[in-house]
Length: 418
View (spheres, rainbow, N blue to C red):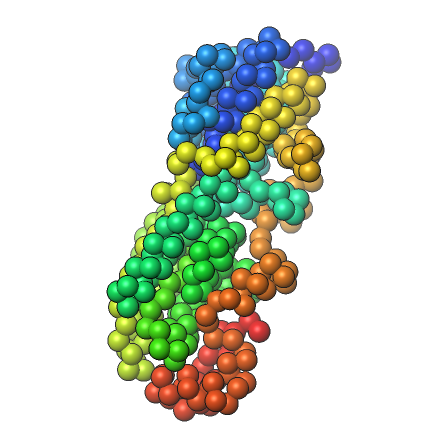
């Protein structure tokens, strides 16, 4: 485009749902229509565009979107259709958008969608401008410190309420609850829920700097927490476990879990791995070996969080994001991720958020060296180094586990961070 003239903008949603999608669509559409730009919504992410099908669309005007910010889910639906597998599919998406007369594509999605958006922009040879709006309840896009992806706040809030109920259930019934929270690689959602709700402990992938971890290590963390609670006359507790733990388990252990499915981007379908049930059974088995019979219930927390009505934070945030994306489009912007920093729109070029080692979008992990994580860890009831270094505390724990203190220390020392 020698001289950029904006006439038509397309909006699509890809990846998993997140609260606030419709609010982004609304804000962007209103801003664009007020400036005379035609807005077309693309159904089902990249699915139809990859096939050269331009019929699955809806034209959006202000009356169509004026109240959709209160609606759950996505009026454009969403899929994980992946155009990055083959160069011809990227080309087909570009050609489909050109056939529709689209000048700018606004993509709403997480790290995989952002990667697809970057390839579209790169391969369009200036035929198409592409702007990405970061969406995921996992909060794992590599945004500046303190900047959340939209949807996380709402999902976190509901996750806390559900966990509070499970904590009370555990106390009332005298048992343990293992809650597995969504988060493909990073533990932001799990830790945020566990820390805010006051769960007994939270286990996240970032605790383990090594590439892989063994299932017995995770089980021993849970066994140690049960023992520590019993030593304080509390035969109950609630553990929050990030589903991303599954991605760090050794390959043979994953195979033991049964049929492993992968999504369109090649990621393990973690929701299909029954991590909670596996940990429940293994923990019960290890507890029985030391003479402790414990009732444990497992529950996944994930899909319940993705299509709820956005809370006030995400409503306001998504209005800012949608408006800023539209404004950037009107100003000729392209190849950028939309961020709001200190109340101002700051575009981040795609190449700045790509990992040079993988060539894909960077994933933001929790920094376990920060005070924020230190606070979360401090208030967890789990075995810590000081428990093993205090002779009296060690003996009390070892007595509950029906083993000598030295044996107890040797077994559980590897499960403590500090």
